[in-house]
Length: 341
Ligand code: ATP
Ligand code: LTN
Image (cartoon, rainbow, N blue to C red; front, side):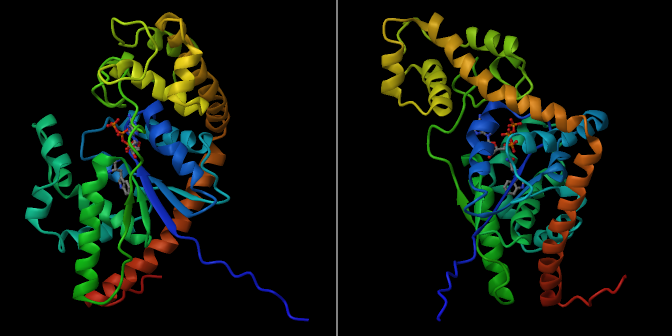
């Protein structure tokens, strides 16, 4: 009897990383992490905390250590599944720093000078415009290229960095021989950006000084309700999705994103009611989403040995993949292999 083989194509690989300089926000969750959780069945996913990138801005060592561990636990609590996905901490995999140096030498000063994030951040931190801030995109290119990633889900602000990684990959492939797949950015559709509750023209950010504008994953139900009640809206009181109603539009998008309802359905649901009814309703769906994540986060933080086992095993898995790429790259350049073990 002939057997039917159902050979499926190998899964495409996704890589993304997160800053760990504070507590994740509702923006990170709805705009990025929740989607990344959803990729885990269809793609081979590799995610990491970009703690090497983080020191381009000064970090307080005590807080930084806490944020790294907590961010790792939050990612697990939000649904990153270690049965399917590799989740590691960048500084624990030495190849990132190594390949980053190499890629520095294949990236032009002019290319890095055009990066808008560099221009923004050097203005914002004028007292510390360090070389790391300038070469940040080379480290990011190393992150992506070490794992031979096909797709890189990022916010629109990171698109320019992924384009630089593509250019560096093509340049290296051209100078030597095909080494890196050329990665494609995956940018969420418009509307996936959660805006500040206090200034709806700015994205909700973990580094915002105005704490009332940001919902963090750690906020308790009372805080969430209070922040939504204070959210900036407009002088009309109709729940309506329309141009110029940025504050209300943002609340509606949060509500839509958590309930799956369309804007028309939301308008109908709150017809004849004002913001006084709408705001607590948005707060409630956010509370319902965050409470189970916070519960799981607390359980994980109560088991530091388990967390250590997870990040150690995952750094080992990442290291295995990364060193394969790095040795290929070094061999092509002409370095002699080191036999240290
Ligand atoms: P900061 O808040 O300090 O500017 P960040 O939260 O933007 O940092 P990351 O933690 O690296 O930086 O972001 C992880 C992912 O979350 C990125 O893909 C980013 O585009 C996305 N993200 C961040 N803020 C928002 C937001 N307000 N709405 C939607 N997506 C967001
Ligand atoms: N620069 C990104 C974080 C980041 C990243 C990466 C994202 C570092 N390395 C590799 C995707 C792939 C940020 O600031 N959000």
